[in-house]
Image 1 (tube, rainbow, N blue to C red):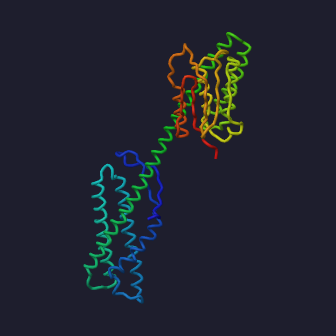
Image 2 (spheres, rainbow, N blue to C red; image 1 turned 90 degrees about the vertical axis):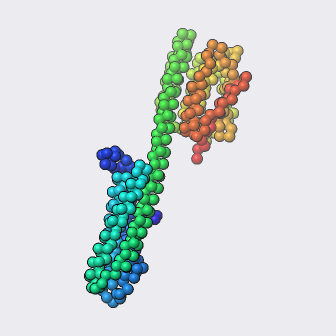
Image 3 (spheres, rainbow, N blue to C red; image 1 turned 120 degrees about the vertical axis):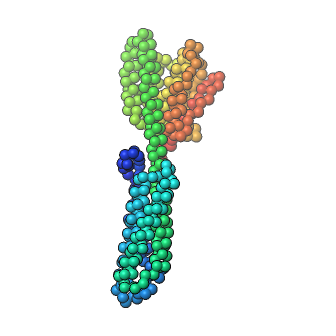
Length: 362
């Protein structure tokens, strides 16, 4: 039954049943094949045309007649099937639906078959109707109708299951996108809070550097806004943005911030990464560690096994409360939504390491 191609549409059900998604079958091909086949096959199998010869016009007219009968039976039962689907489903009222289907098939197919065969016998001039043959043909028609109805219902259920899977996938995707947007939106206030703290410090201690900081801050924030609707960016672009952010940090910390990379400049063009993720890792390091001439913050970036490694020296600030790890949780959730893998962290007495999975550019 590969010819039974399907398409879905949202239609209004009966008022008391609300709205639901129905499946409409495009079964034109199978009907064009099935109706003539049954109209030709059944009379030959039952010997209904044994009394006629090829030379008689009634022989050929009878085939047309039985094809019409086959069409009436097929189309009528098809209509009843579709009406039944609007009233009952296999999930809410399966027994009622089964009974109604059988009643519809039997009490429509049998009267139509018997009456049309009686008319045919009368037309060809047979004085005595062969009721045994009529009973056999009626039984065969009912069995064939039940089989075709079963095929229709199977295709309907398979397509409904497929539609439900698509619907669930769409819901999961919408949920993931909503979560991702919420996580992205957390970056802005977090970044602005830290930046304003830094700016306040510079205004009090070095107004000239505060002005330069403000100008650079505008450039950094422009990137955040530009990538707000992007799910992934080139690692090269993310590192370029992060370098502008570290320029801001150097306005405050000077040479107490030491950053190095262990990979060449072209490597960053081979990978994708969620935007502002490296920037958030740097923020995490700056927030929790002492940075001074005596204790400089050293940050090293490397790439190994399709992971970006960000390692920073560890000397936690004494006056900072215990970390809530909200920033790292945000980062981990974003990576899981976009790459299917979370970040990994490792900590010892001297270092803190974040490993971020990268996506290779095809």
